[in-house]
Amino acid sequence: MNDIVKQYYGETLQGTKDLKTDACCTEASPPEFVKPILAQIHPEVIERHYGCGLIVPEHLEGLTILDLGCGTGRDAYLLSRLVGPQGSVIGVDMTEKQLAIARRHAEFHRKAFGYQKSNVQFLHGDIERLDRLAIPAASVDLVVSNCVINLASDKAAVLRQAYHVLKPGGEIYFADIYADRRVPAQLKQDPVLYGECLSGALYWNDFLTLAVRQGFPDPRQVGGRPIRVESPQLSKRLGNIRFFSATYRLFKLPDLEPACEDYGQAVIYRGTIPYHPDRFVLDKHHVMEKGRVLPVCGNTWRMLKETRFAPHFEFIGSFDTHYGLFAGCGGGLPFAEATSASANNGCC
Image (cartoon, rainbow, N blue to C red; front, top):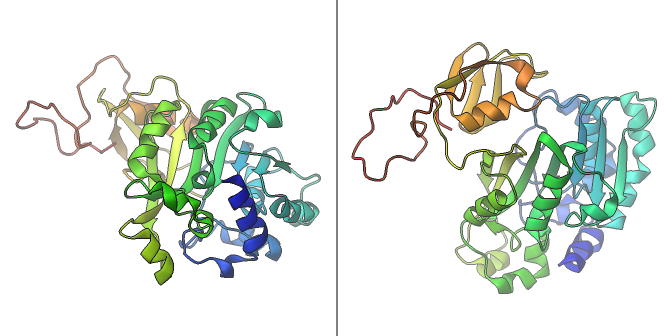
């Protein structure tokens, strides 16, 4: 599969105009604070960018970020501006021609951002074998990836390696393509379907199982959208399979529980995360307004309390008393006809 990817992204695609689907395109308009930074990025880097989402999580200043499948470096340079001169970004990609473009414009971006020295480095390598790149264990605050993990042959290895280099309390924040069913094996041999990020996509439920097995027991979806396949030829080959772009965040927190458990806890967002004065979006179920008390499950409480987000929240409660499953999260006692829990609690 590596040869297919190198050929498709190093030779076949010369720009976004050559894509045959919108799978590797970021449709949503970026937040206002991101737009002026994107305007500073070199046009050649922008033109050869293939991503299905916006991988800009919150509170990045001073972080060390690892970008898996960085390509020409658009996301790496965007993030290098947001981490500031005290932070750093490491981009990894297997395609030399993509990396050549990224490296060619390092000095351009250093000057554009007003840094004394560049805070970005690009490494040639396989995201399934980060251990060969001498990235120390527990040295990275945040791992990002934009429409790349679906191209990996061994997706479990990617998550396992990412877990290894993450610091405790760190996270993987990535956009990727998922299918509504398991993709037939023969379609994975099609270089166009694979290169367009479709036939290598995981069935979404298999992804959740995979994430849990690699140490991330509570994956949180931030957002998603359906993928359009407008080519009649490609659509015919795919049949009834539907594809979706989705952004997930996975936290490296030991002993997160497999279900949303209620300990009577709540949080209050202080409104202090840069660029997010009014609300903080942890995931699609948790939009936290400034100053509002939000009941949360134990896992959500820890995702805020034991990560870089802790200074920006007030925390109510502890783990002293367990009240069962958190109300409204799709679970319940298998032998109960109804629940007496309040329907006003937030959903995890």
